[in-house]
Image (cartoon, rainbow, N blue to C red):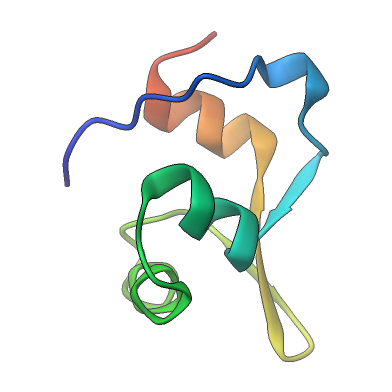
Length: 65
């Protein structure tokens, strides 16, 4: 997967990001992000019928410590 670059500082993001938020940040469709979550390429948690990406995991993906 390509390196993720984001313009929003980590401190202003919520602790759990929705698929819609991730899709907007990555420039992908929501279906593509869901598929990446299901395959494990994006570390995410499945709560009920929704996928969420913990901000800490996004920080790991982007190299922000």
